[in-house]
Every structure is written in structure tokens, then in C-alpha cells.
Figure 1: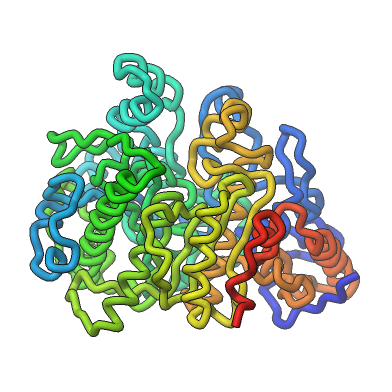
Figure 2: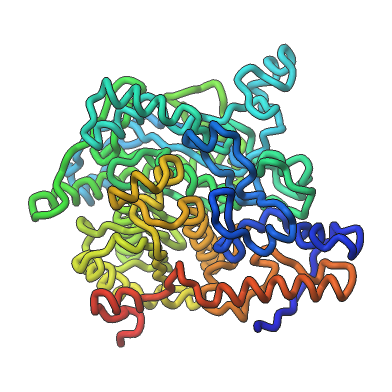
Length: 572
């Protein structure tokens, strides 16, 4: 049995010791769904409920769903303490020829585009009326026709028309079929975020004001971390066939914990489909995944993607300075103006999935080369403090180059083959001196998952059909997404990039060393010793159970056993 004592105290919201269920659920309510407790939780579909949820008598991460939500695709709520806002931004001429970039990459770009398209996720306050909506609110009241859940802001649909056509084209479905099929299939799927909502102001947060937009149904009022003056920034790169919205759960989840996440829609021919300036369509380019000729083409795509990452950094820096470049999509709402001075550009992370994971490695390799060469690209300068890659596909990445920041690789059980593992080994071997002492073996493998468990698809479509196609594993899809984002957030915190994050990475390393508050409990918040002992027992039970970690393997040992590739972190 782990002997747990909490090093600090938390405000108590209990009225006494008689109601131990309310005591168990009171401290830091928003952390009750973190994977330390969540890994054994359940919904009505039959998974076991965590000890916290049994005692609290409710499951805030998975409230009872309406019948149509059980039949049709539906987003689960984000689990962080802050509501999430979202907006799309297209920056024209962001990729106009730049002498420094062209001298570095040449003209080997797959497509000729003149704009950058991103989707931005950020901590938001949907209760505040944006200045652009004051006239409408004065006319219609706070419940505007387009608003959702009593706010003036709508929850955007996950799938637009061109994304449906693009996903259909990616799986070789005729356009006239895919547009109708995907449109009908995902008509109920709306992001748990508010379009164009104002940025959440810094300082203390009123739980009664914020939590109704975080969970359904709203939990009891509980302490929420004060909103920081500045948010860290994450640049996110999608995989083959993806778009700016394919990873809306991962990006929104990180935003709900206090990050500004900028998801790029790449126009190198790797997106399922992208529409430039609402006129020019960029279709998916079918390029092979083996052979030297295809590798050259993929390298060109990576070069294009690196340029787009630089453009995204330049755009973020303009917002941070309070500049307002024109948005080619909609110039009515301007939530980015409130990001002036609110983004910490010294706390940035590069992240991506699959081809986007490979892109992230290439970006960090280029960052290291720039620093060693003393190059300065101004607003387009790379200054990432860490990297997070999910199932990185390294086919077009130079395995003879390392990175100069901590890099966490979160892999599913099935997305592995010798060439990719060897490339990852070589890159890590050239980068190990830069890995954080807090994360000395930064490789995590989640058992029971497959490649698409990192995207929104498995959560929305279900693991049955995608599981037969070997794209989803048997693990519950929401649980898989929450495991991955919890590890990313914890890794960021350990790298000095502050988030309202669970210390799940630390729980994997040493469950005896984890502050119980990090897994959703605060025994010292109870009013009497009996209640404290009771809650400590709950913590002990959870930590004891998590010591085995049958679902998550930390470190390189899994690769060594399966592929006989030695650990790059233990080599001299």
C-alpha cells in the first residue's frame, strides 16, 4: 500500500464530515477526469467507474447522453478547467517568397499557394459579449439566434462541406456520395468550444461563471486555477489526409488547460482538401509511402510544411504585438486582438501526428541548424522549447540530424515497423543530451490503440468499424485521447511550459512520488481526520492500481523487446 500524505492543502467546499461523497468530489473538481483516476472509469457502455466517481455518485466526464447522441457522432467535453474558444484565420501572402527561406529550401514546394490557413483554440469566456456583438445583443438579448447554451456564440460544426468531400476523396469515395454521406453522418458533431468567443481574462475565476461551459451537467462549484497572464503556444501539424479540424479534441483539450493551440491546414497536397481564399481548391495528392522517388516528393512536402510553420510563427508574433492582419475568411469578429500580450512566446511547443509528427521533428531539426548557424528569421524565427509527436512517420525526415529540445513520442501499439523505429532511435541518439532530466526516457506506448486513436475519427465514428480496418484499437476512444493529451500536458509542465495539467507522466515513472492532488484528490481539504483517512484510502487504491499500468508502457523497453533495437538513451 502506498503511504500518501498531501504536501499542501486546498480550500474545502464540504460542510461537514457526514457527507463523504461530497467531500470526495469537492476538491478541484475539474481534475476528477484525469487519467490517474480515469483509466478505470466507465460510462453506461460497461467500463468500470473510477473510485472517485463511485463516491461522488456521478461521472462528469461522461454525463448521461440523449438517445440521438448515442446513435450519432458526438464530441465528449474537454476536461480542463477553462472553456475553449475557436476561430479560423486565413492570412493572405503569408508564403510570399522570402529570400532567407528560398535560399534555404529553394523552390521545391509541391504547391504554389499564397496564404496560410489555421484554426486557433484558446481559453475563452463565452459569457462576455464581444464588442462586435454589442449591437445584436442590445436588439435580441443575450440569447442570439446563432448562439448556443445561452451564449452569443455558436459551437461550430466539426465538418464543413469541403472537409466532407476531402475525407471522401481520401478514401476514394465519389464526391456526390461523400458530400451527402459525411454531411448526414456528422451533422450533430459540434465542437465543445465557442466560435469567436473572447479570450479568458487573467486572474481568479468564478467557478459558477465558467464551469457550466466546461462540463455537462455543471459540477458543483470548485476551485479553479487562476487564469495566467500569458498562455504558452502550441503549433500543431496534421497527418496525411487531415485538416485543421481533424484533431479538434487534442487541440481543444490542451487549450482547456491554458494553451493557445494553432492548428495549421497544410497546403502541400497532404490535406484531404483545402480551399484557399474561399476560391482555389487544393486536392489531396496521392504520393506513395515507399521508394526513393516518393521520398523525394515527401521531402518537398516537408519543406513546404516547415515554411508554413514559420508563417504561423510570424502570424502569432503579429497577434502578440497587437497587430491585426486581415482575415480572408471573416473580418467581422476579431478575437485574436485580445491575444495581444497574452501569449508567452518563450514557452512554445511544436506538435503533430503521423506526417505531422515527422514535420514536427523536421521543424525542430531546422531550429537546431538555425541556432548553430546563428541565423535569424525575424518573426519567422523558430524558438520552440519542446516537441510532442504522436505516431511520427519519419519517411521524409533526415535521421542523421538531432533536435536540441526535449521531445516526447507518444505511440500507439500498432504504428511501428523496423525502418521507422530505427529512424526514431537515430534521431533520439543525436538528441539525448537535450532531453529533460525530468523525462529521461521520453517514449510512451499506449497498448490497445491504433493510428487513428490520436484523431477525432474513432471518438466520432466508433471503434467497431475502424477497428476492423485496423485504424482503431480496442481501448475506449475517449479514454485514449485523454491519456495522450494528459501525457502531453504533463510533459509540457515538466519541460517548464506551465499548464493546468495532471502529473500523469510522473505517475507512470513513480506512483509513490505523486502528489495525490494531481490525480484529482486533496485529502487534507477534509474537515476531520476520519474524512482525511477515508480520502487517503481512495488515493492509495488508485495509485496502487496504477502501478501496473497495463495500458501504457513508458520508455524504450517496448521497442527493444519487439524490434531488438537498443535504447538510444542508455548508449554511450
